[in-house]
Length: 201
Length: 65
Image (cartoon, rainbow over the protein chains, first blue to last red):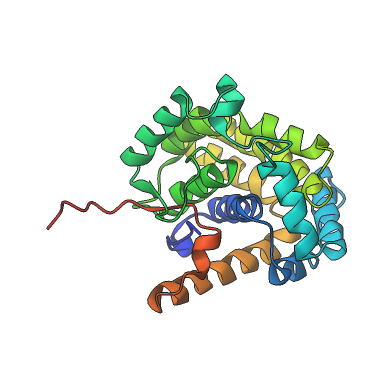
């Protein structure tokens, strides 16, 4: 996980953002194992819309098992040919994989000192990858933590322009049971992120 | 107080008091911390477990001596 930076050195609100980006990256990068499910089921939320989504995730984790989740993950994101969803920025932005948005992302990754992990074969604009990148830019896992302006630029170019639509699709996907509240949390988190960036502008 | 300091405090309050900051924040932090801790151990021992979730890493300039 791209959380290698020292979280003590960044502000409380930024550590919070790193944690949620990391969690989204983890859950969307691979189906969760039993240890992760055991931790998720202990989460609780307040009465807000976000709190209710977190409670729904905890309830979904309690009802899920790794074998069923392997299947759900496959149906949603991999499939035969492709899954119910195609979780890549280039696809969302152009209708095709490996288009210009991926080239732009690779360029910006290089600039920020980010490389694809050696054993990963899928394109870098996977939703889990860009969540990990945001976490790492905020925490400083790839070098010095990026300032808010740089975070926002990366967010606008590679996350904010498609991930909100992806999370809405995930929330509504036929195959999504465990992943439905993940979609809700992602959608709400994107809205909070955008509003947070606006406040600093 | 300067304008940008006030903005930064507003933003902190906004994020920390959102549903993402209240209640669940500690538990999520613990999950992520455990993950990061495991990653360091696995890295130290040459284990591969962490690569199941890590899609990206720091770019190492191979040409540098």
